[in-house]
Length: 370
View 1 (tube, one colour):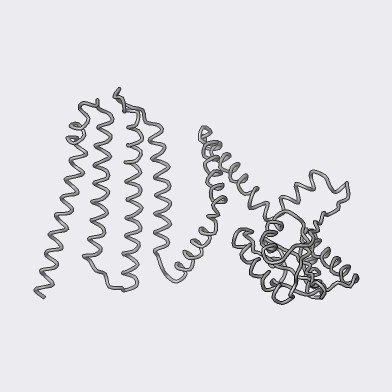
View 2 (cartoon, helix red, strand yellow):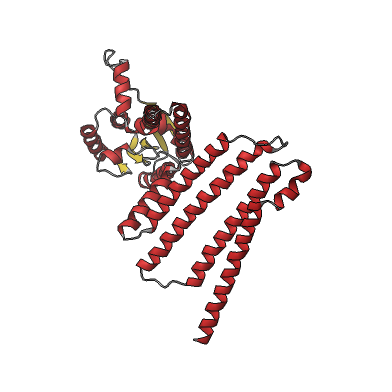
């Protein structure tokens, strides 16, 4: 019994799916030749195109040698990450089921496509790997041409050109407005955030958030607008609080006074975060009114007062900590619990709880009377 060979092309980032109307898996010489011709008209300079033609050539050679051979293309997705590999695995299973192949000749242009070798070998042995290297005329292979082509590549633009553009844009703007001392720090902060997003692949969650927000706004919901404003305020407030903590200096010579600016920064951030919560709360309340939904005042009042009491208690503890750190160790506890801010915040918290209790009692009695 002759061995059934599969000539396989893997397009991990799905250039074929994005640049042609064809959807993988694609099986058969005629189908793949049609893909190659369509792909050539769409992007004649893509290395995947050369890989496809090389696979067709290998297929023809093997068939001339009398081998039982089939050819196929499987694709991942644009993200070229774990989800792409899972899609490739599913398509490989489908191709193997249809072709009954017992060995694979993998044709690749290297780079990302060879990440899938372990996936393939877990289902079928790879008999050969043919790497395609594109030949260039020496005059074309200049630095200018290479840079130009790199800048035109969408993947390079997203991964490298975009963060560099953000870096220089922020740096230039801050230089123009006379904030040159912050230019480098702000640019590095943005680039670091971008790197974290790419490393942990947070962009997919961000895209999903944007899509959900757009759908809700289109359907008439106002909550996403309030959520976005709250997020911007929270981020801006936290950054401003960090600036406050950095710029403050200890006012006493107490051993732990150097930590006071940090506590003050956290207190400042607590107010901004609570303001963000209030904006979200107001947005939710207004949306209930707009949608004519039943509003349970006791539940809304309980939620609002609980959050306010919680932030007041946090501020009271932070105020006490601030005083304790700025005072000598032997007087720290007394100074903390007798400080004005500590007492005021606790009194306000107790007052709000008392008012809530009275209002809830009156509402309950009113319902019982009715």
